[in-house]
Image 1 (tube, protein in one colour):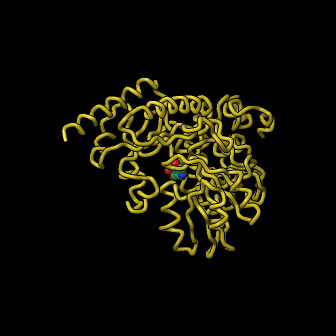
Image 2: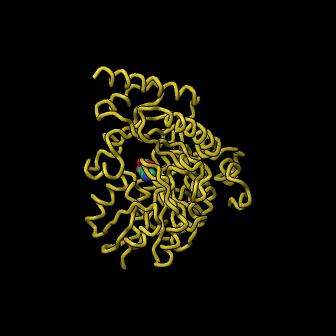
Image 3: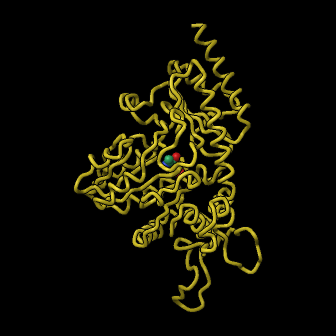
Length: 390
Ligand SMILES: *Cc1c(COP(=O)(O)O)cnc(C)c1O
């Protein structure tokens, strides 16, 4: 339906994809269709929408838009990012094995370890910066390679193309959680990935006002299996949330440009602060971004030379950066992984992985970069006074 957009650039597709066919109102924007069920012309008529667990015009409009942005053929929208992860895992059966990056979103790790283990699915975790890590950890029963790139919270980059090639050689599907990069910066299907995952709650929604998730594919068989999962399980996204994400997507390219620009300025500033031991930001050392990423993204992590209590005080002393979980909204957020997003990982496991008590993660928003830097400066000054007082 969005065939006329095939040769268009992503900024054009973000604005024009996911319109509903004219419903008689000449509405320019896609309407919200809350109907759960639809009138049939005769018993068993399935020529149109039947029931909104199968299909809903607003959700389908969002799904077409997501497919267009990721250069896929089909997309499925779910009630949360985790519901979408779960739909992928429902492709597996007892006895199957998955290799995942170890620097993984906490909720995904929890689902893998605390729930799917009960169903006889097994997981191995690898650093993943060397694509051969995946190959080495693969077994005869490995069915999936699970990648996040940039990773969370250390913002490491994984070579999607190299991992997907290794997967295809062994009939293993490669899934890429593209939440941090967004299709504006990286399109994993173009690099050979089989399934793209998104938490729509982050950059795609873009305003910290919805929870949603999505899967995007190119392969027809995989699409059918995921669609079956979506309607059989029933964790799809509602029409109002679908509409909010459609609205968010229209500004995704402009927002991402600004997120990247602000994050780059903040990463450079942090590098100049003597209380900062290390800054994690894609491409900061080399100035180059490998793996076909078009920009560094809006996330920055850094290690502060201070103890647990001092770092906890630091994250509450910013005024513009809001202390909160999540990311990808217009407002800047600050997060202390050791006591927030990654608190469920035991210290002896997270510390060797680089998630120490001094690590702070920023989701850089769309405010003026100078104001954001001034906010961090005053927080560092407060920390310095504390360190001197001791
Ligand atoms: C937030 C997030 C998820 C989970 O999505 P929800 O919408 O919170 O369920 C998965 N992966 C990544 C990388 C995330 O940031």
